[in-house]
Length: 74
Image (cartoon, rainbow, N blue to C red; front, top):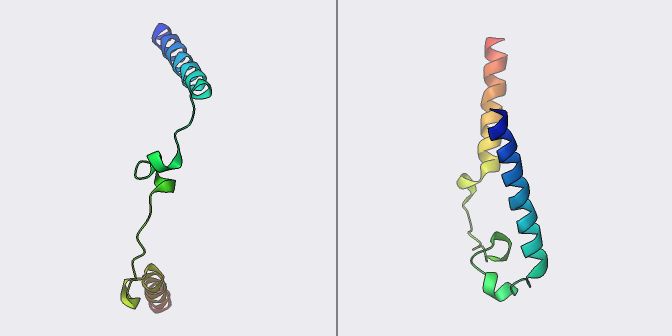
């Protein structure tokens, strides 16, 4: 059991070190090449929601029902 644990530690350390070395030795790709692959560079469509599909309205409605039930059954 200890041998497997030490083997996992060695493998993780080697993988971490190789990742850091490769990251430092290679140039980063331009933002244009990463569009669509990276979340922060992917354009997000702006969707207009109607008033009944907003989560804030559902949260307020649930809160009001919760307060009403607590007052009724307390």
